[in-house]
Amino acid sequence: MALVDLVMPKLGESIMEATILKWHKKPGDKIAQDETVLDIATDKVDSEVPSTAAGVLEEILFQENDVVPIGTVIARIRSGTEAAITSSPAPSAPTATPYEEAKVIEEVPYKPVSTATPSSPSSGPRFYSPLVMNIAASEGISMTELEQIPGTGQEGRVSKKDILAYIANKQNGNIAVPSQPTHAAAAPAKQEIAIAPASVPTTYSGNVEIIEMDRMRKLIAKHMVDSVSTSPHVTSFVECDVTNMVLWRDKIKKEFEKREGEKITYTPLFIESVVKCIKKYPMLSSSVEGDKIIIKKDLNIGMATALPSGNLIVPVIKNADQLNLTGLTKQVNNLANAARNNKLKPDDTVGGTFTLTNVGTFGSIMGTPIINQPQVAIMAVGAIKKRPVVIETPQGDSIAIRHMMYISMSYDHRIIDGALGATFLNAVAKDLENFDPNRTF
Image (cartoon, rainbow, N blue to C red; front, side, top):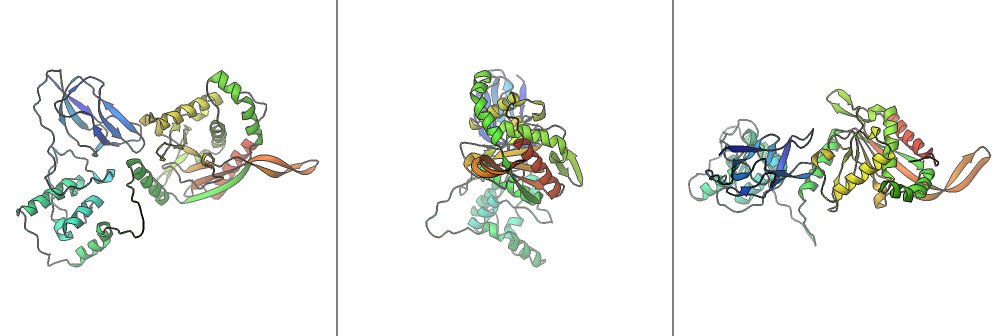
């Protein structure tokens, strides 16, 4: 019977790692080919990993919540239904005070437990995850002690397993508490000051409720902070008269649904206009790498979509400039439905070059969105409202009731100046205002 390696699958062009959420099988379980073995998650979507062979799960190399690079062997399957089990599950952490593992991907080592070897503490500053710092604070482990613990994590970092093993050995009397060093006293003191806030428990007064962020919310929070620290954001606004577009959609939407089997929303109309204007101003579809500007010729438009959980995800319409209005409508509806039903594939959320978010869906008239890295711009469309507006005509000015909307765009001021940002935004507004009410679909 042959051993077959189960590897972390490639999940998209830009995805380099994934987090193991749940193992559906354990060593010794029989597995059919294409049967789901585990659930994984990237910073975009959750996915199932099927078995590549029929047989028995021989060995699991990574545990739940571990972060694994793409292409890494995560388990081994002994092909054939009668295969014998020769391996045991990866060893668990030593018995100690239980702590809840923080599901932050940066805190989990890449190396499997079965192959990790202890590393000696480096002479330079060491990184300690918030989880390790909280355990150290709870158990009264000083920074001097922490620095002496061998780490099996990436680059010799101390993992949860390492510190729990140290605590267990210390409680059993197998480890003596190290004395304070007599040299270089200033350096450790400085390091303790730098990381002390992570080990100090926060107290709350009054009537409060504490809610743990779910995995996706943690990732969203990290992406938002990273984006603001990466790109100097500037936001421009413009007012847009979309009366012709609104009246045209009202006129054709029943016929459109009858003929195409799809409901037409405003989103594909906005995307159509955005794509047309990006072709005039290609800098809006780019990214920054060091001191280089990478202009993306493939126009892949992301559309921010709300999930039932309240979180947001950005599925991407690939090559949007090659689709007509009917094609855009079908893509928008398919991706939105897949997002709401948790059916998005990893490739559905990568490769975006520009993002559109419709804040008007929730009643907002305008917004200041945060750029979806590594893009350089994101546009927000607000709620469409009827308002009295001054209309200029050759015969003179008049006041009429019009369908008005605010459009805003946040852009990366490193490469997009206010002149270009405002010019592009006005181009989109003018294109929508000049919508042909007699067009076909």
